[in-house]
Image (cartoon, rainbow over all chains, first blue to last red; front, side, top):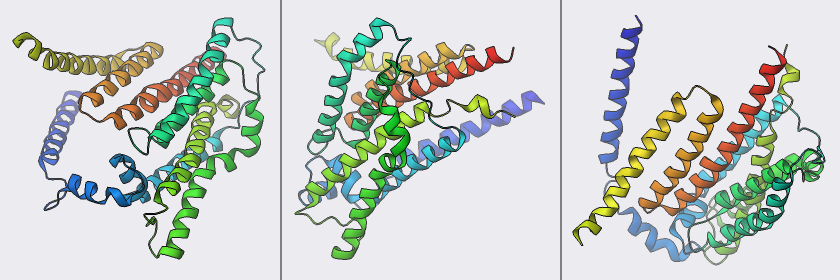
Length: 222
Length: 89
């Protein structure tokens, strides 16, 4: 019986591999040269890096929904457990404390640099936010967790700002421009920077809160 | 000269083999902590693979989120699972 199951599973996986191989051979968009299309519109996008132009301008709707997905994930985790109280860092070893003191400023700086670099070269809110979140987690592990009190009080404000600002821009473009997220070329650069800045903060806060996540899960056991 | 031109494909092949190996070890290592370590190593190698495919944006995201934060999340989960086992022997 088990051998039959394995055979069926293997067959299904083989079929999946076949479908994937077939999908890779398909043209991305029939009759369209997508890279050339993007390069042609790049001047109107407000940024000079094509990936950022697609993520924040041409396909901004997808990125907005990605931020919503993060928020929903956080909501799910928060339903299970509250944030733990600050520990004060009594039990943290010297090496970790010194390492955190050295690394934290660098991490914050690199995160902000990635945000800024996103306009012209690889970088952006998700990468920068992940680094800032990593800085937050390092701070937690090193016992520098006084910011937990702020996180506890203002979690939904901080985690929701990214989606909120993105939605505000979307509403603004809908009212004044007539198209949802149709950023006007003259203001697109600054709008993208504003959206990404708040997204960076919200992503970092969400990732730290997810890391803290299920701290009290044991207490809820039946 | 000919040996030099063979170096990049050889390194790529090495990268691909290392990826498969770390992925397999991450899935089939019984102890959870080493499995997480293999997962993080897999993420870092995957970031390198994305760089080789000339996708630095994806490489950055993979290194920061895939290897870094997911690794931290998994390690926290392992630590908590361990605490649980000790509570209920």
